[in-house]
Structures are given as C-alpha cells and as structure tokens.
Image 1: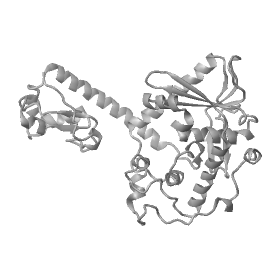
Image 2: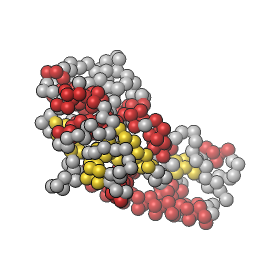
Image 3: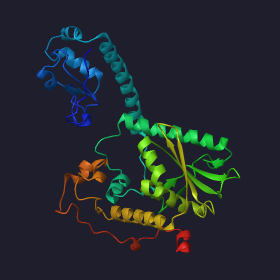
Image 4: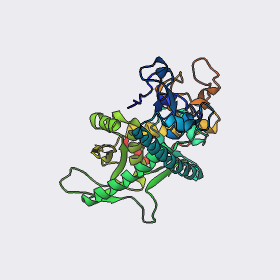
Length: 356
C-alpha cells in the first residue's frame, strides 16, 4: 500500500497549496506515479489546502482531462476512499466556515475598549482594537468554530454549577448581562456570572464573581500547574478589573474571592481557583485603559511590546503586518507624545481610593 508521508522540511502552514496557492492545511502526498524508493519520489512531494485541490492536481497537472482516471490506477481502494472522505469533509467544512465568516462580518463592531482585553501586554495592539482598525486578515472559519465551542462549554458549566447547588446569576432582571461602563462608555465589561450562594461545605463567601474559560489540554495543564495569575495574566487582569468595577453595582463583590473555572476541552477536566481581589492589578489595568484612550485621542501611537516583528508577542498579533509596515525609527518604536493620564478625568472608582 502506498504510504503517505507528511511534509517535514517546512511546516505545512508555511507552504502554499499546489493548486489554489492558499496556505497548506497538512495534506501532502507523494506523486503516486513515481516508483517506491525512487529519488524522484521525494522531490515530487507537494502540499495542498485540502483533498479537493489534491484531486484537481492529480487529474490535470499534465493538461489531460483523462489524467484523473489514469492516476486513480495507482491509488489503492482504501486511499481512494480516504480521498473521497476528505473531499466531502472539506466541502462541508467550507460551507460551514463561509456561513460563520458571513455572520461574523455582519456583527456590529465594538465601540468601546473591552475590559477583558486590558490584560493584553501590547498597548498598541489595544489601540488598533479600540480604533476598529481592520486586521491583517479576518478570522478563519476554524477560529470562529473555536469561539463558538467556547460559548457552549460556558453554557454547560452554568448548568453544572446550578445542579451542584450554586445560586448562579448570569442575567439581570431585564435580561442582559451583568456588566459595567466607565469613561463615558468608552470602557466596558460583561461578566460571566455572579454567585449569590453555594454548598455550605465550601469555604466561599458571597457575592462572588464567576468567570469561565475553556482551554485545550496544554493550556489547561499550565493553568492547573501554575495558577491563573502566572499562567494567564490577561485573564487575571480581567478578573481583578471586573471585581473592582462591579463593586458599585454589587456591594461586597470585591471583598470576596472570585471563582475562576477552566474546562479542559480535550478531557472535560475542571480547574477551579478562588482569586482574591488584587487592587494593584486592577489599578494598573485601569491606568492602561486611560493611556490607550489618551493616546487615541491625541493621534499618538503607544510603543509596541517588542522591537522585532519576530517577537512572540508580535508573531500572532492580528495587526502585525500593518504595525510593522511603515517603521520610522531605528529602535522599533514610533515616536510618540503621550498625554499623561493625570491630565484626564480619572477612571479610578471609589473602592481603589479606599483600598490605597
């Protein structure tokens, strides 16, 4: 049976499909016409975005309309079945992803800086986000499916907690999410839920903030090993800021540890951690929001997180190409003239002043 050896010299996502020139998605096979053990066999290895393009390549690369039928003579029934299965899978996935991307494009963009994002290390990236700057490329269908699956895991967690005896509130009396608004509505946040009570044998006090995330196995294991504050500073800042700003609406919520819950998407394991209120972290996050808004108002760009676009923090940024396209300084930072946060009306709520 002909073997299918994955391409190893270059990661598949860095290769282009032999047919449509889109990023390869892991489908790389030898040319079935070359004999086993042939040196030419390794040289003829190509990559495809999916089984459909591979099929097209095998059938038309020599310019013959009958080439596909000839090629299939060199493919075993099992390999042909696998190709046909991949083709159907790719076609259905394509339709689903197209629908998800269309739905995502129709959503109204945020007109505020999300409180859940203030833990992001790069302040310039947050400026791009607040200013609704188009990303280098839209979210792929796969990413949108991951987002959608995360919402489903959260819904499951809500049911599980209520079944376990927790009085968990996820909507206000008017049907909306619990949340807060600051800086004349330019900074907003929406919480996953508020715990009003729970099983009596737990060492918990109420009311308490509840935040839930789902994560792949490696990320979940890191959370379980190192804890939220070290493993995921973005989520840690979100919890602290939400405890802070929700104090005005739900007195006492900043005095009680928040319950952070993470679901392992691969194994369904649960990680729960009680997070005491960190007023210093909340203050730093609030100050960051002030700096970002001030810089945007002044048409200034805050420094990047790094001086090299290959830095890990830049490599996966949605605005990497745009940010590094017009470099104007030698040190990797654009010149800025940032307004001091003290020149603006402070965002700090009263609980921060009282805890100082």
